[in-house]
Length: 324
Image (cartoon, rainbow, N blue to C red; front, side, top):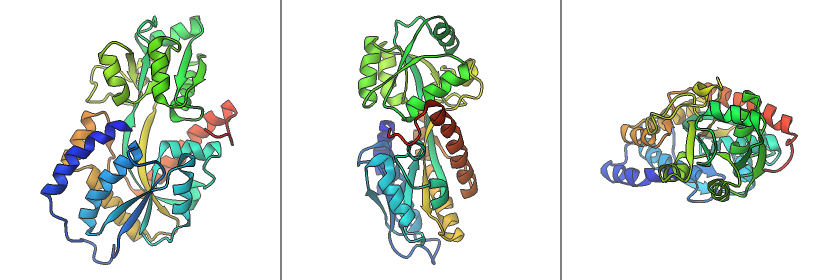
């Protein structure tokens, strides 16, 4: 996401102020580590990975090199990661979108079986936004309105997290709204501001200026808890849809069979990076959360739960084995 680009200036200062640390694990690593990213340079996943990789290099005393292998919703990078030697020198950045792409059939590699969880790095909520003329100023009012008359929502494409998140909201709130998919969030926001669609979900950085200028209105934040950056904005869950949770997230995977001792080193050091005070503070200010200390097994279970949750939505929509 674009808000992660705001980390780069802060991180640049930190990198110049801190000398490269001596490796605290003399047996590993002995050579550079490659991190495969399934999106182009400059994307949210890429920016996040590069930010973590530079600090991880310092902590491990070896270069951590980002290798962009964009295409097919991350299928190329994930497949390469699954086929790499399980020696700790190849990692893959995983996102929520990769999981839904696997369920849609765009990614053929079984993430839950062919790769090993290392750690979740961070998560970020979305905003539920509406056209200012919509006769609803809260989630409860939106639900009531959707039950009274037809509404149309926009997404950034069929099978995207935004699409599935809106369908999850419809299911949990027992309402119906017509879906209009766009080729990217930019086009969907243009039509939302113009009133051709009424509702959508988008990231806080994209929507923030539009909300402040009155071109859109924010109805709720999609995470389970409110965020420091928007303390007065209620969550969807506290606004009548108990249990609703929609967040983008990023984490590291390794090839299946990577020794647990190496996984534990990567887990510990990666979590330490995203929990450094400067990075954690910047993330919180922009609505993102550094991952809490989580064991590889916890991230594995989280991925499995996400797979089950989104699988149900995708099957209910008849989208399985269709490209996003």
